[in-house]
Amino acid sequence: MPAPGLVMGGVLGLQCGAALTTRLYPVVGPAGVVSLRLCLAAVVLTALWRPGLRWDRTTLGVAAAAGTLLAVHHLSYYEAVDRLPLGAATTMEFLGPFAIALFGSRRAADLLWACLAAAGVVLLSHSGIPLDTAGLACALLAGCCWGGYILVGKRLAERVPDGRGLALAVTWGALLSLPYGIAQAGSRLLEPTTLALAAVVAILSSVLPYTFHLEALRRLPPRTFGVLTSLEPAVGALIGLVLLGQHLAVPQWAGVLAVALASIGATRAPGRAGPRRRVGSSVDGHVRARQSREPPC
Image (cartoon, rainbow, N blue to C red; front, side, top):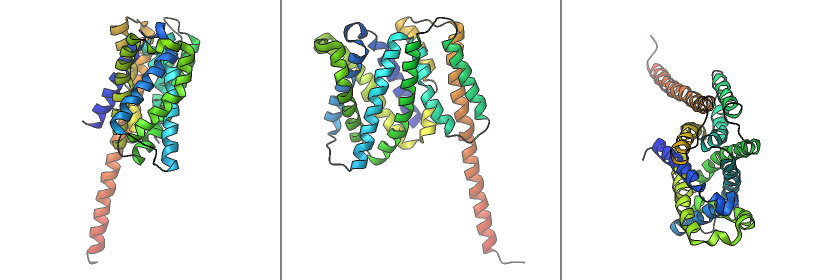
């Protein structure tokens, strides 16, 4: 599968899984959802890849950092989804990948895309339906962690050529989140109906998306990966509308679209410029080489 298809498949899985978790919130709460999701995903990934611990300290440290970022991201993101419409939470969370795409650019024109994204955030959070302030803060924290995971995940994908690194990272994240889940939900985590729905969420939201994303990160630079997820806010808003009946006001829809368009714009222009520079430098090199071989007149 092409790398863009892997990224979009991961985006759909993440948002559909996030929509399903709303059924678990009344039973186990956001922390319980995170614990179940990561623990079940860790079991599946460990059974598939059997990662072991015979790695150098640097690789173990990168895997631990990735797992820590996943745990904090999940805890903050699901707290945000519990307080905000799915589209609003996803839009605020996406600012992390967008920042990576923006900081990786050397184009002055990208400041315009940054202003458009900022305008989108203002439209989303200060118009139409009032949004919970704590939920917005949690979504922003999730965005910081997601942006950090893109950078660390790139290193992990380069150091481990298969899914063993991901299995170890998710297992570490599950261990970190488990105390919070037990404190919030207790024995309700082990109810059969809860476990069955949590297993579906774990496959949709963790196993498939993170496997897809890690494979995509092996082929793409972090900046490109960050922008390929530019449709995630719109996807989250649409899934929230279709599956959950969550409505946004017209200005908030405009904010979602502004962030998505800013991300697309920040990505596409540098992507076209790069190949032209490489082709030009290659042609210049051939010309210089040919001139050096030709005898002087």
